[in-house]
Length: 219
Image 1: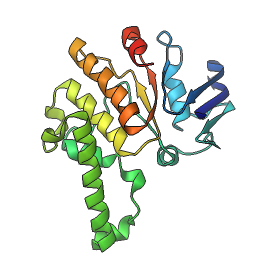
Image 2: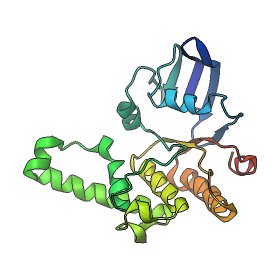
Image 3: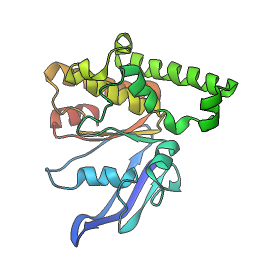
Image 4: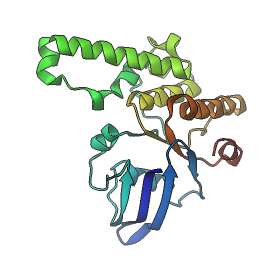
């Protein structure tokens, strides 16, 4: 059964058609890849899926419901998370704080609870910390949790972003060129991690990637 079903998607900017009548499905528990040359509109597809762009026509069904008109935070709450081509970390914050920021879509205590430090707020903070540490352990960065993100090597900063995406508790994870800037050894680690995300966490994956060797090993 398909978790993601994209139907006849069309996206245009100022009369220029970026996506033309695109349809595809991603089955639950699979790893699928969206491939094509630079400028083909792959990242624009991800932006449509996550609510940053609104298509001119077509539909996007996720987990049995249309998400075409939903705002990004509601799509994240529904279970779709993404990473970006370019790192988007809070570099002056710690590694743990960066990952904790990914759980904002799952919080419920509200602003008043945060001010008054109610019991529910304290329990929620403990849960956020615990889940974030689990995600860091999964990507192999728990021991680095108190370091500022900007002090980590590039490859580890990538892992922080992946851990933050996992912290949203997604059903589906969109990887946008995750191997960009990684050396051979780091790419091998990435392949292993992508497979673990599917096999151990049960998360469906859709990725954009130019490294066809990597694509063939995971898709």
